[in-house]
Image 1: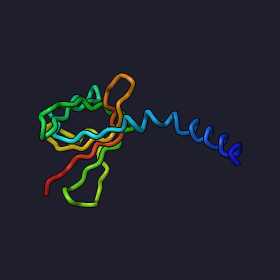
Image 2: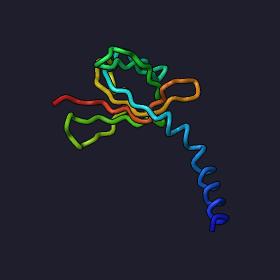
Image 3: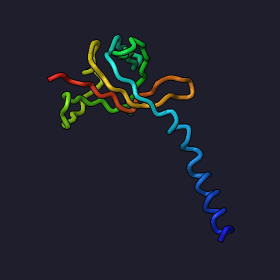
Length: 111
């Protein structure tokens, strides 16, 4: 019985091990767009509570959405509709260079 569990355990470790860095690096950034550079596909987001700024990089695979505060209705938009001063929530990960790569940028609309 123990001999049957060892290969299962080793297989599980080999399957899950490559996914661990990606899971550990998933990140969220929330705040207002301080600066945007559409030519370089970058946003600088200033956190509301701490005033810290974080550079957010995006590319053609990044999904852009907009959503009213408290609403469940989400609308797809494009990068050109995110402007300086907009409130955003960015979900993504840190790459091997330590840069934040956005998978989703959600523009928050006030009512």
